Amino acid sequence: MQCIICKKDKPHDKFTEEHIFPDSIGGNIILDCVCKECNDFLGHSVDSNLVNHVFVQFNRLALKIAGKSGKIPNPLAEGYINDSQEKIQYIFNNSGIPKELRIFPKIQIFSGDNGILEIQIDADVKDRDKLTSIINKKLKRLGLDDLSKEEKQKIENAQPLPGERPLIRKTIAIDIFRYKRAIIKIAYELAYYWLGATYLNDEIGELLRLSIMDNSLEGLWLKKYPINAHIDLIGEKPIFPYWTDEKDHHIGLIQRFDSNLICCIKIFNIFQGIIIISKNAHLYPTFINKFIAINAQTQESRESDLETELLKIIESIITYSGI
Ligand SMILES: [Zn+2]
Image 1: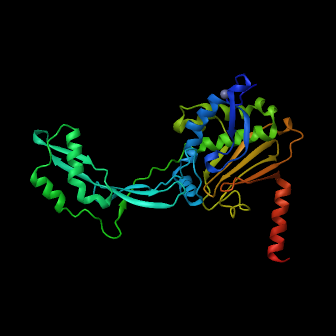
Image 2 (image 1 turned 90 degrees about the horizontal axis):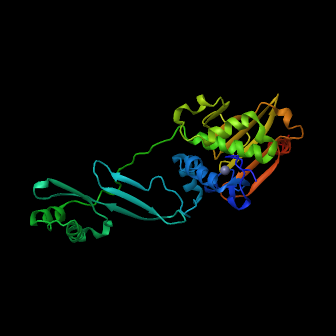
Image 3 (image 1 turned 135 degrees about the vertical axis):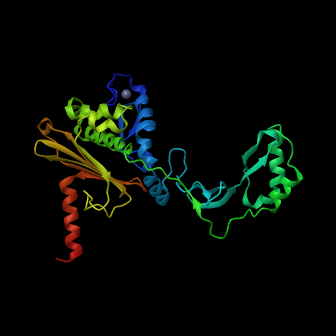
């Protein structure tokens, strides 16, 4: 059996389920022709850039979509109290419901000749009165002396509680590039899903495959592989004007356009991609334009040919407008 990612022939038991749209964002269409090694690689190096993208994490939190660990991501979980080094953690339970707020004070202690020792204390805000004994325990473990009387007093007299509405400082890194490879992966696998094994001989398919496997690309990626793709934030110019109401859905479609096959992908209402997946549409004479919508929350999917889907939309517009 041939793996569609590394193209190696391997025995059946070396294959595992590959989710075309990652399962951490509710994807439920599965391929069985990706070997375990490639599956792991795709999970760590490709899909992770999409499912852990900060914009996607906000959506997963809002829709309560857990990852493989069973945890719902929370991009706002940790921050620092304004102008201080005191860490604050907003803890959500596994169902994504806010549970408690913890504050981790950072305390400076002057330790002999060595200057300043900074330690982060794992203490609940309620345990402030126990701080000095917690610090002493920590110091003992480090082989250092107990707090001096002055230090003890300084900590006890501090104003540890932030105000009613503390300002939280949080640094967020936004990936503007890596997630695109994950969308190329979805396009490549969707193409195989609908076009079948013939697609493994497609010139453009081969370029997509190589770019998915190439981990060394960084910013050079689209230059190294001449792929015709536009992948970006949806912003004000959705290429899916008909489906933006379905903001908790992922959408994929493949459509014939002259001698090309074009794949369009929407991830929530965040990212969109339009990718030429073949310049030899004649190789697939029986192919009928395809459509799939996946509800990220319920994992229910709606798959049909594109014309049927568009007819349904036109019907609903007509009904809605009362023509
Ligand atoms: Zn493989």
